Length: 336
Length: 66
Figure (cartoon, rainbow over the protein chains, first blue to last red):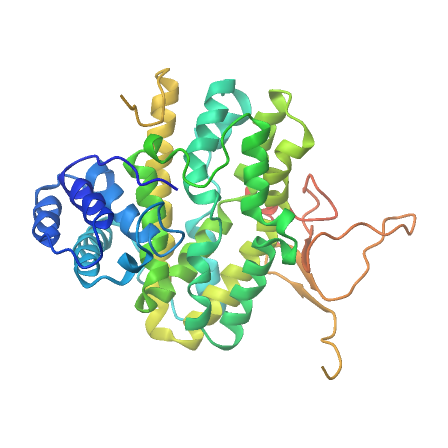
């Protein structure tokens, strides 16, 4: 994919640095310190979240014309650390995490199901099912594309960091995410098919310029957890919360696309998730997160933090989308 | 490989029945129901819209397993 356009001084410094020849030294860490210190809200800071997204993306697929070795460049790593530390600090401060959960399999699973219990009231999924216009369906797909075209990848990083039952549980879920070995059924491939069915560009990263900070933050959270072995518990909790809040909304997303006359091939992505995530949430809650808490009790709080942080950012992203749509405006980032 | 893992059935607390392994799922006329994944979740609350599979509805209706 192409390097995105900068949204402020830090993303400018980062994209400029990785466009230079490897080994260039430009004191971007000073720019990073200033950017995170002066940010009024890191989670919705377009400049900071885009800069973090770009640095993380070097670990996934990289960018056209950018030397792959920037991924492990010491200066860039130190910049990433400054931003990640500030991002994690903010989340540790604001996210409410239950503190009375014993590190036992069934207790942790029950706590995760309680945290993710369905709630009545307005949601993006209900809006999509009943009211979304054709253009809003496109916006939904564009917003989701930044993660869904690499669906499952951030959590896969935890596999080599786990052992025994929790490792097997994560592999069981991820194997299904990757289509059980059938490239056509990989969830990212099904999402690409849905995008093409709606007439959108399914190329990886095609819409990054339109993705607002809060949506980048949701993805940056997964990358933060996935890239750090220290945070393997948070990855397990994040995946559990993600799966537990997926089946019912995907039913509603599918309904919205059917309401607009889309065929089965286009809604397959959503229909697949209704069935798959009803399986995954059970495995993720008990055999992955629950069993991991029992196996490594010191990870219990991180498991719950990972779940709570996932829900916190997803709620903010949902509010962003819903308030834009109900006001009749676009949920996408405006570009000149 | 020495032998295969046996088919297992797990009743999830207040949730579906997880089936892992080579079980064939049949409809009431004895016709096989297509399985699209290695592990499937069968509806236990009766309210799924994609029976015999689970779609998570048990959580919305507050299902409590007997």
